[in-house]
Length: 113
Length: 113
Image 1: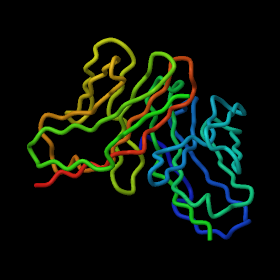
Image 2: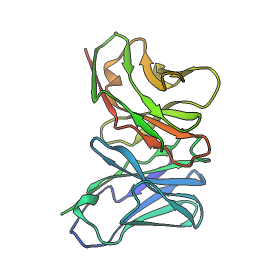
Image 3: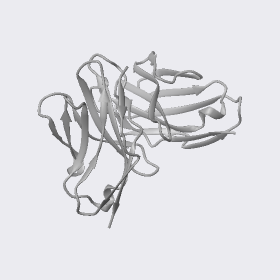
């Protein structure tokens, strides 16, 4: 999976608790992305980053925040998890912007009960 | 707003037969188009992309796709399907000047021996 790791790979949490997912890359790529995958919806962009401390919202950013303090790490935080945030979360990287192909991590399966 | 449609939830084909997975798109200008494949419990893998130039694009694992501007389509094709091609396929689009990739809902390809 192209030098991308995600942690944890599986998590079950309760409604209202904070959750942080981590994406780590060893490729030194500038762009990093967080997507969620839900049946029938394909992948939807949550947030992305175009450099350290440079982030922007995607299509479904409500209820999520991100941080990028180092090139290699991109964190996704659910401040107060809800059942609608049960999903599979994928991190992706690309050397430049979206004209270039993205490489995806293995995913994190999050269940909010 | 840009959008992608994959009209078939599932495509069934016999091994050795040609396969086509359909994708149509809508963007405000010229598109950048991508195909990705997802195997079970894995992240997405890049197959091929159209940026400009020749309308027939060749990619990984013997796949190719044809860009048709008048029909706003970018169908994925392979002359002879393999059982190992069975997976979930996603089409994605970005318009020039945009900064987000929009994915279709995915098409499951089943290749029967």
